[in-house]
Image 1: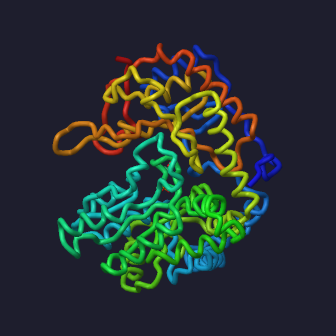
Image 2: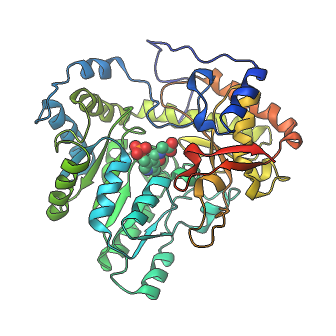
Length: 456
Ligand code: F0G
């Protein structure tokens, strides 16, 4: 598991934004201190997201050009579906244009009411569950809410928390379990193979389907290979196949581990009724059943992305690049979520800015200051992202108040990571000068995308 250098050589280049600190100060004020709203041309190193930001290989581009463009059944549709059937072991694969489209369809078909347990929320996933009439219940292990706990499987589900829901609301109150791999908002934290198996056996005994959010399944498989000695010599492909075997279906945003910049899919192991209903929704909301709103070129590129994501050298360099950045910050005493996750390093804003109350949005403020300091764009994942309780109107004030430094796949080098680390270390030295924020514009749903702030 040695990371010496990137697993690629650069073929096409894109210049990054160059601005002065004064310019960044005025740009940031103009966009209301919301890094989502920064014009990308003014961003230096862009760590907003690892979603749809991956560099494609020469093979992927040639596949793209070979796309047989038709809304009917192109060869590219079959190639993508066959690859995904092989990886998941599921009978049915339905392409969608993004992950949230698959979430929408699954939630509408499977949820009428009741409680949907999940290992921490993801913004769009939870919203779709709520819009279908369900109530999300967080059943992730307690360690996941403690940024300083060094438990290595912080993505795990605590089965006792599912039992509590069944005790309180009865059998039949859970339409399905929403089980995410390499849990994004917990800090990119993996789930252990034993936990996935145990949750599946428990759910089988209670007739509850297990539905994965397998968006970052490959990163999770890599962590199992690295951290669980029984899997050191097992190929990534076989680890993935075993993970998928402990579930009944999945939603995926392919814009992450599946190495494409647009696309997703819904996978269903064997429930034909669910499959038929999903196909009819695809025609209403997405496009045809053989495109899901994707072009044939996108599907062809996706099939190749799946082939490439299984390469051990690629996934090792990808996750170890994240580990490298995290370790540089830890060595300098910067408070980050530990253990270091797979797709991103998360700065613990509560410990970085202890003088700012959570209702003054320390993580939002830190993300905007990092941009002003260095031109690096990060994303708030804390009180702003988790929103307000619809009944009380209060902010949720989640345990985790984080700034996410999300690393695009195959896009940046070790020297970019060094610059990011050096800039954060500089900012830490003047952390006492950083002020909190208040909303000047607050949208009702998913407020982190469009909200605007001013310094308090
Ligand atoms: N599930 C997870 C775990 C995600 O991280 C995302 C997107 C989605 C579902 C939704 O997929 O964007 O294709 O519709 N995460 C991005 C991020 C937006 O930056 O973390 P989508």
